[in-house]
Image 1 (cartoon, rainbow, N blue to C red):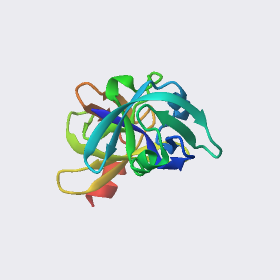
Image 2 (tube, rainbow, N blue to C red; image 1 turned 120 degrees about the vertical axis):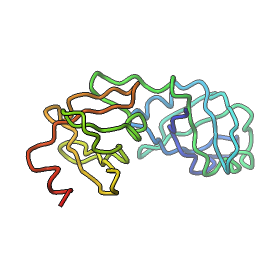
Image 3 (cartoon, rainbow, N blue to C red; image 1 turned 180 degrees about the vertical axis):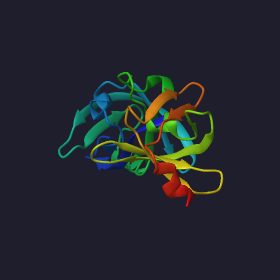
Image 4 (spheres, helix red, strand yellow; image 1 turned 45 degrees about the horizontal axis):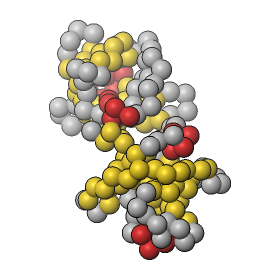
Length: 172
């Protein structure tokens, strides 16, 4: 599995550097990442990161080994830079990457399957899990400790205790 960390937006100068927009909650990792894979138009190419530096308003400039002129840098425009899953930044306890949650089966405390997590919405107070039920309904589950009782990323299983009346809203 690959984790997207940046999007190449444009060449920077004439020596092969590229401007990138971070796609990670940890943009500083761009300064310490040694190797990335560029995915563009269905093709993957691996690059060593020679150097990286912040570049105004949340952007970064990267120099990738083998990309030595503006034309080569231009060929990477639109590429998504990725790292293997095992190179993702470790998270604190009880926090999860969205990509680890998508597709997880969601059960209530009685073991009834409610559906699968189809998306996670980042809201002001807390995230919200979008659970797609077998009948096609979408159930919005607040991702707070008293509702989400268990997240087992390895077995792709989430157990929730929805607030009273929540499920009835979605079941008509």
